Length: 167
Image (cartoon, rainbow, N blue to C red; front, side, top):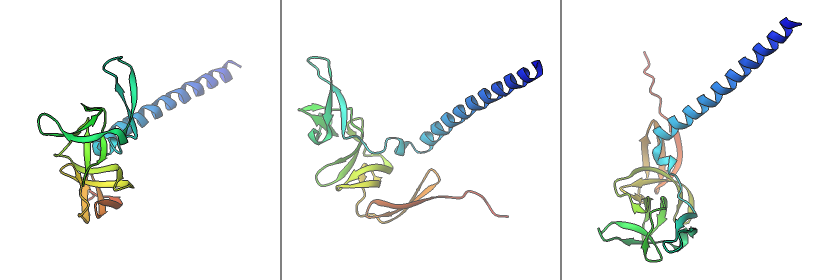
């Protein structure tokens, strides 16, 4: 009887160790993917985000349609809400006439990569070059081992690039 109990305890310990190892492996994989594709980790922007009312200190939801894109005191294009610079937005932002990639409330004019979100009224993955969706670009671009086929700035398909060398 004690032998059966010992085997059951051993199985339980093995199961627990396997479950913990699986969770740790999944978390490591998620962090690795975010590290390889930081531009996709930001992907999309939000339809609303939180802001803190400067008078009451209470967090308020802000509808992205209420944001404007204006130059700040340094001449940088930034998101504004009710006349105040708004730094809680990251993602694609429909400007006039371009769609911009905004990071923490400021157009990231150095950013080149793929971003998921809405551009020109259409959801998808978009090729951003120097902070703007490249609507006139058609071709392919490779980022972090993935090649993206792009038509008029929108990603049509993507595939992993093999790094194996044939003998």
